View 1: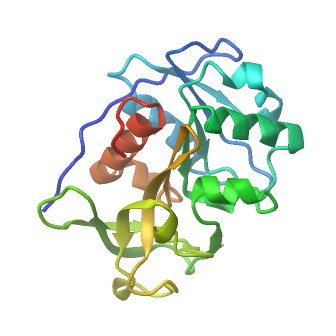
View 2 (view 1 turned 180 degrees about the vertical axis):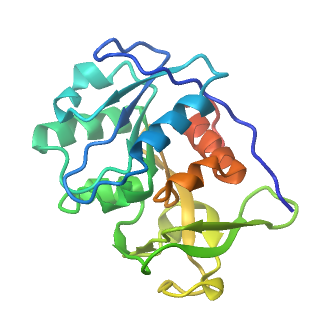
Length: 237
């Protein structure tokens, strides 16, 4: 029943602003809650990218969000960002970058970011609403091109969202609320999805609160898939 999706990208941490066409930007600024798993998330992204000859520039400096600085990147990753992390000109630069053909990948609390910016809510697909206390164990069910549903068990902090994103995105995976306490979205609880934004691409997963999640082979497969789509290496998300 388990199936790993085999995409790989290479990320190497280098100083800014030495961006080139073989680079992505991993952004981890937090203005609210800060996840202890952020270093593990960045390290995992680097490992997953190792076979695709891409590097990563990792920053928490929002001033790099300008048209000139973002233009060379294949994708921007919001890895457990929280709160209001960009001002109005920086928001405009990110929006122009994505709609002009850039890529976005959001991890976990990327959905707990920029609540006062409606366009960002559409980019990520759905904003965070609340979560059950502690870590919960449930089944994850992949959707899409599987011959039959592909399921595995995962333990993490599981977000409830302010809306079900399904009408607006392509859902890639859901969680089974009947296997844990505190779900509020019912029988259809998306946890990973993607969408086009203008000429660009957006991919998001709610996984990534707990550091141990990044060692899960199925989560790594999802992240490879997300990186491949966000960077434009594959049209399939």
